[in-house]
Amino acid sequence: MSEKSIINHLKSIFKFEKEMQDWLQEEFDKKLSLADLITNTEKFEGFIPSSPIERKIFNSFNYCLKGLWSNIILSSDENISISRGKSESLKPDFTFYDEERESIVIVELKNSKNASRQTGTEFGAYSNEIKSHFPYLSDGDVINVIISPIWATLLKNYIFHEIFWLDRNIICLEPIKENEENKLKIIDINSLFGNIFIKNELNKLGGFQICLYDYEKITKEERKKIYPSLDQMRIAMDVIAKTGNAQKNNGFAFLWKDLSGDPLSPYNITIVNISAYKQIFENNNISQNNFTEKLFKTIQTSNSDGHGGSLFKIATEVKKILGDFCTPECEGFTNWKELYKFMKGNKLISFYSWGIYEDLFLERILKKQKKGDTKMSLRSPDEGIEFIRELLGDEFENSEVEHSLPINIDDDFPF
Image (cartoon, rainbow, N blue to C red; front, side, top):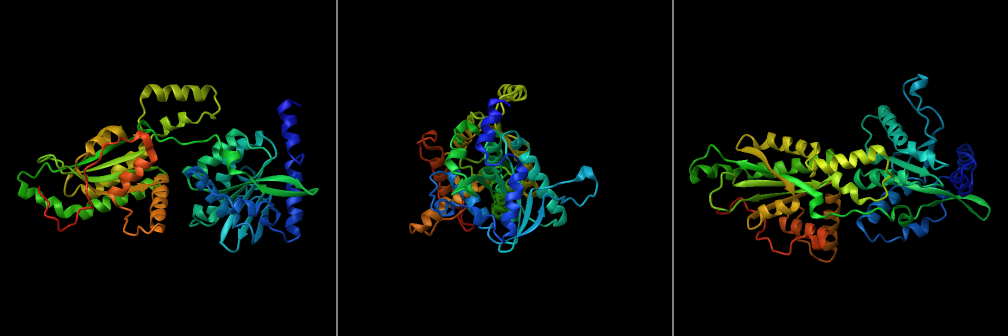
């Protein structure tokens, strides 16, 4: 047995996953729940997150924990697949029905470092198969539980991705000995994800502008016909956020009016998202192999700036709404720093966000409301600019942006 294997087995209080399975089944037969077996619930509930990452993971763990008290066993290492062929066999270690939350709980047991490689694939397969029984079941109604003594980098990266970026409900538990009895504990968030961090440098945020051209209008008087279409523009912004969330994208957008003379594009939408390919270089824990090395070199030489297919999907949906009164064109493919310069000195109308940015922005709004500021709007461009400035810190330019409150439809606006 290799040195790593010896260490892995020494760390585990079970020799095999089957032993862990049998122990849990015995406890469930005593009418105990998973939550009854967790020894550090009170300590966990007293944890105070100090960063967006900690907050996101804590919320996921906490949501799952509340779904582990009142469970009915649905399966124990049994095939849950509708298909009867052996090749279609899917056997989660346990599945429960949570009576209080009306959720499905999937429990996966791991007892070695190597076993973590399959976890992501298995959870996805189990969840999808359950949805084949209940097609309208949402991701929010599925709770995923991982019980393992070993937390390899590959497994941690998978869990972080699923929780932070994809909003999956996951909790991580570890089997321990307490007073000579087998118990479970909730993994310490910092020990599990302490080396994972997100940096939002300006060049990690890429995007472009959708310029709403008014080619067919000649005079300023005729161009006023686009003005009543502000409501359609706001609908387009709603579609941007909705499509962004559906694409599991993470970004934000500003609707603004160009005040520079008499432009052919009086209105513009700036769309920005995280450049996933550049962001990944910040994670030093990614295991290197030939494929990783080739992938990184390809991305570095191809100058990927965050203009991926999901962002173009957003733009396509927007064009469907705006195309009846203007000619939308995608331009200015660059990073946030350059896109921000285009917006300077112009009239910002509204701000929209999606994915992790929507979560963080809403959290900021709620904090300000608790301090007595109740006049804020989720669509306020002022709040949006301040929000981005806070996220980027010193990376954000210190120069002020000349803008005002959202345009009122009755404003006497010069065209």
